[in-house]
Length: 469
Ligand code: FAD
Ligand code: NAI
Image (tube, rainbow, N blue to C red; front, side):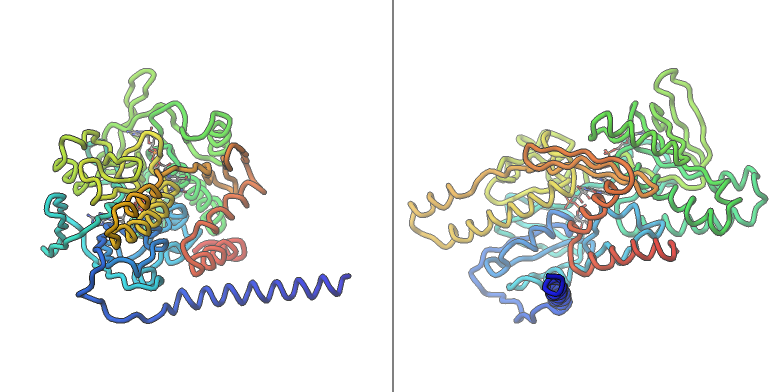
């Protein structure tokens, strides 16, 4: 029996390894495709963006059915769920980014990638203008440009704060952290100037702010504390939230657990403090209870107060004033068509506003998968002349239904809160051990490619063995 089990395990292990190597090889060596067919009858799809919605669509769509052009200023896909781990080196930035050129070459058809920002969309002429002045025409436009950090017009934020939205934000935060630690190490312990450099403030108690504060605290405790305990003792991480609790998308038991955990780990959690203005190394916050103002010195300020509308999205809204009446995002119908441009423009992800969906990767991903299915049916419709067949095919296009699978949040010191849903089942896990492993496993499964899955797992093991860099 043992011999049999051993050989079965060996065989299964070899098959899994072989399959893994084959998948990795295929991703790194995509099939060479013929040059772009310029004169074909395929309908033209222009996709704006290279984020969660756009890349999921690209990975799911049959690229042979259409002539597809992807336009984005960003030449990579960014796995945002692990972005807060990157500035402190829990994962490397390379492990959570995947090049668009690799992703566009994975299907059977050719996809053109133009690294440009779209500056204007004209729904009437069905054209998109790019930053370099080029004009692209489309039959179908997929508008998935995401959102930008919201500052609510608070003065001094752009000039003095770091955001955590793009890969470049992680690089600048990492550099600033190293610079401040080095400068502080040269100053006398406990001195006011040193404490100011080592005051790291995060504004916004949503998941971005919480995960960033948690990762900073891990870095201070586990790395700085190891090579310079006096320096670690002078570091202070403050998390500022305007409301009475953090992580509003979780239930009370879970966010209370998270709050207690952050405080226990040394984070100064300031609830009901609203940021008012930011000046050079000082932030002014207002206490919501007694309206008093408090100035707090900082060496690093991370701004994470949620999403705002991008200029191109606001511009598109202004072209459809009858139907686009909500400034929080583009309004769409149940088939993800943009109100006012049904049949030609689809809007997905964070640039849209829907009361039932949070702006999450989970929503954007499911929307991308749904639209790929819609395009499969539409290709058949576009190739059909028979009216009855067209009607039958049209009836196959179901409404988009979002399947909420829960929410996860890392809270530091290898602990997480997980609200996992499957149909009507609901499991809540909080704390260390299994909860942390569930959090890690979920993100390994979600990672975009075999390459990134491998690198993320490798980074986590590396942190355990030799620490962060
Ligand atoms: P994005 O992924 O932001 O992509 C937008 C794309 O459009 C980008 O490629 C951008 O360069 C491009 N673009 C911008 N302007 C233009 C233009 N003018 N023309 C052409 N292209 C343009 N969600 C979860 O579900 N789980 C998580 O754990 C999670 N963690 C997160 C952690 C962080 C730090 C952040 C910031 C977000 C996190 N989210 C998470 C939210 C998730 O990242 C977003 O909901 C998701 O990225 C939205 O996908 P999107 O495609 O709409 O936009
Ligand atoms: P958010 O909108 O979720 O949270 C922003 C927080 O900032 C809110 O709690 C708000 O009350 C607070 N705030 C706003 N203005 C403030 C001010 N002036 N002073 C103090 N506090 C202020 O934003 P976040 O965290 O960037 O997330 C954006 C989206 O991305 C959300 O939909 C979120 O669900 C998703 N996301 C999900 C993650 C996960 O599932 N683990 C991780 C990160 C983001």
